[in-house]
Image (cartoon, rainbow, N blue to C red; front, side):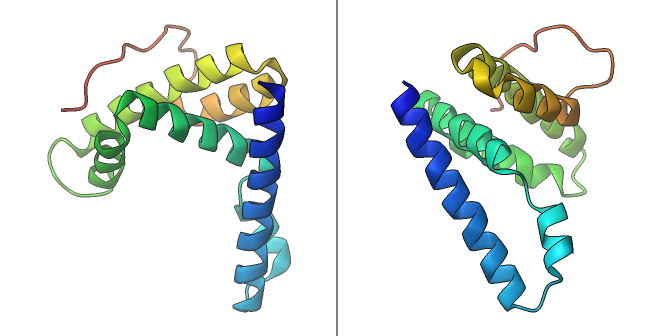
Length: 127
């Protein structure tokens, strides 16, 4: 399992480096690029989340919910909260499987959970 994690970490670092290079070549300020992009460990957690979504067959629903969240449709906020709940549950699972990513996961959970929320989110279908 740690070999898989090492390979994914290397891929995440390569992806981050590629994003930095592309944006700097396009004329972006390097300091802003570094500040705006997720850290390598965050990209690693996102990759693991995406792998789990694919394994569950939920990637399409999740992606549509995230896209709908950015619209003005009446249920956009609800769909965003559902996707946040899925993120929170998946992130917790990642922290349990990969304790070395716990600190990153907890930092990322701050982006998806309301302050003071200690309850496990339910895994409801987005559809």
